Image 1 (cartoon, rainbow, N blue to C red):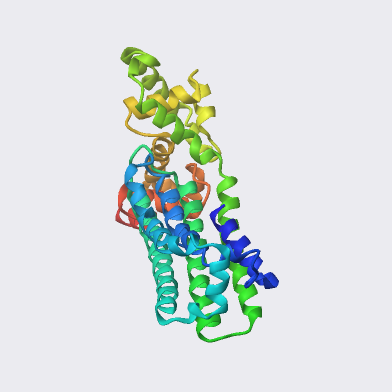
Image 2 (image 1 turned 180 degrees about the horizontal axis):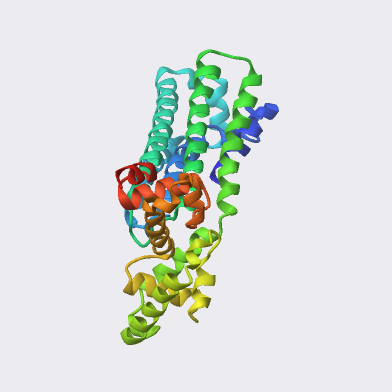
Length: 330
């Protein structure tokens, strides 16, 4: 919605309404929106590894300050704004300095958040909390991070090429369209990942409850034994399409109850729990002389991983070594 509002304001200007009295209040109103995009992206990614924190509001201090800086101008009546532009007051050095500060500040801020997003992904890869995303979700989030980095590059290029080098207006349209494409791709991909939030919502609810609200510690112990026995005997984790509801059904629990069991009593979550068994199975196969003829990626697929990237990343996360190094040292 933030970017759509920003785009709508720019479209009004593209349609030769830049000095229109009807739309005079759109002048400079886009700056707070520009400074919102980076923080919103970062807080969105950060929310995938931990519940929303009040500390997240600090990321919105700069957009708020930008709004406060422009409030006197926004509060001017329409006639005063028209006179401001007609009489050339906007060409005064202090006004030009303010706009230049906004340009450079927004470029720096968006670039900084692109960097912070990559650093956040690195932290995600090392995290082992109950809220940590699994490998598939992590790969998906890294794609969003790269798309946002492309947006940051396009945004910087926009001011360099259009405002400073004075390229034709066609470049304005092309770069703006490319930036819009990046933001909307991020939005669509986020919308198409509803499963990302289901287990997190369940775990957050669980952490607010007392254990007795679902089942007793004795019952939990019995379910743990049943779950471990299932994993060791039937090895459902070898199915790379295994989901939380399917595993829960195998031990006569609801998905919510299984999330509760894993989080409260086993200090894990579904992805960490199943990946632990997959890595253990892969370790055995890598050291098995009878499996030496198998390629490493084949072992990854046989032990329940659905891609080479997921297998290598998860194996190294759990063992500190790549599968190839582990086989060689064994």
